[in-house]
Image (cartoon, rainbow, N blue to C red; front, side):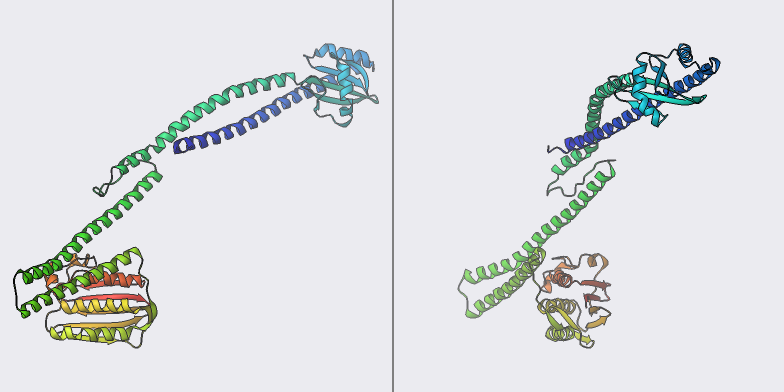
Length: 457
């Protein structure tokens, strides 16, 4: 049974059947005990009445037990049940088959005066009640016995009624359960139909199920959140492919153009060298772009294994500042490096070096001549902070929200002039997060920018 609707209906029907069966058995047992209890009360009342009358008759007849017993029976005229009167175990008088009832109950009378069962009496057994009293030193016993035929007949009617009602109730319960299940699961059908209409072309669509149950509403909300993440991922991927294609096209166009120009006619050796230099420069840019894309793709796939080793961040930061000095000197920018005492760290030295180098390179490239770039290393509690600050052009609030996205440029034209691809800060963010850290930006247009990398110590 693969249908959830049928499974739920079957479970509901099975549970209802078990519950109804237990309820019927409990009610049947209570009814049987109630009927027997009522019969016992009637028999006890009859036995008590007969005992009182027999005592009166014995008083009037001066102890003539047989005649007194006959008078008691004629006065009571019992209805269908047996009233037997005995002196010790000697039969005095009784109804039809009363002597047999008295003899069968004699052993019980000797032990108790409460109601008791006589299973050997009739096809369904019988119930009996006894009363004993003394008169002038003589012991008399009064028995009231009634077969359980009437109780058995009433219980047969109840069993027949339940046998007829049970299938009908199960049929009604099954139909009702199926209807309720179908109605309760209807929103799932709507969700499935809406989900089938969603593709990569309309990931902005969302599931609408109206006022459904809380669980289904939660399911729809979770699915909509998944669609939002997929939509964002597809949008990022489309933008990534478009930007990557654009970035790849530019150096390839330059390389092809230079080659076409060089081959269009005979040229001097100097002209060929100039063309080859341009091709070499663009090839280097293309190679660097491909390496960056490959590294980010591996990072997304989780295939980058960190080469964790012991290192000193103060030495790493000092070396990175020294490496960027030639570029800074060419642009008349002062690079200041302030490191605390030795700061040991466990991480991938190559990736950490590239992270710091990217931040310093960005700071130098976007700081005007005469500006300052400072690199600071601080150990704060269990964390280590690397802060790269500049006095450059700064970054606006809108651009700050996207600055770590791949191929994003706050000023595209200026970025291309600076020989950038818009991948440097994305790589910085990935390296920081791969070391369980984070990178933050604080910037104002015209007042410079400060990038802070926080790494766990």
